[in-house]
Image (cartoon, rainbow, N blue to C red; front, side, top):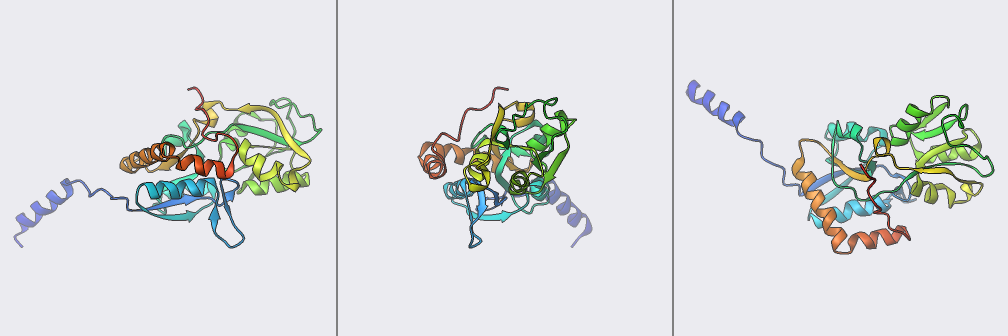
Length: 260
C-alpha cells in the first residue's frame, strides 16, 4: 500500500471514536459476604437483595448478567482494571468515591449505627469511646468515619463484616459501626448477636455516609450509567423492586435520600 495513503488511513482510524459497547453482556462485581444484601448459600450460589437487584436490572436491560465475586476493598480497583463493568455491592455514593468512579442514582438507603454489648452503656462520641476498640470493614464509609473522627479509639479493620461480628461476639472488640440493616439481619437477629444491641444515634452525614447506595461504573462508561439509571426507574415503576424488597424486608429499604 502507498505509504501516504496508509498513514492517512491510520490517522483517520485514530480520529474516529471507538465503537460504543452495546452492553448486551454486563459483568457485575458483587461481594457475597454481606447478608442480607449479598451472601453465599451452602451450595455456593449467590443470593441476597443486591444479587436480586443486579439480576432484575440485567433482565430489564435484556442483557446477559455475569456476577463476579470480589472482596469489598478490591471493588473499585477491580472495576478500573476491567474485571467487571459495574459494582452492585451496597456501595455508598460519596464525594470521595466519585473522584474515582461514577454512580447511578441510589437503589436503596439506610443509616449506619454502632453495635455493642447490651448493658455496656457506651457513650457514642469520640470522647466516650476513647480507648475502646472499634471494628470496621476495611475501605468502607465506616472505616473512613471512625478513622477521621475517633482518634482516641484503636480501629481494627477486617476484610468482611462477618469477621467483625465474630470478634465482637468473642469480646475482642468493643463496638462496630455498620449499616443498620446489615447489623440487624446479619447479627442482631441471629443467636450470636442475642446479647448485643444498637447504641447511639443513626449516622447519615453525607460527607461520610453519602447519598444512599448506588451502582458504580467507570467514568468513561456514561452510557452504561444512563442505562442502569433507566433500569432502576423501570423496576421501581413496574413493581419488580417492591417484590424484591418484600422478599427481604418488612419496610421501605429505598428510604429517603439524605439532604445535601
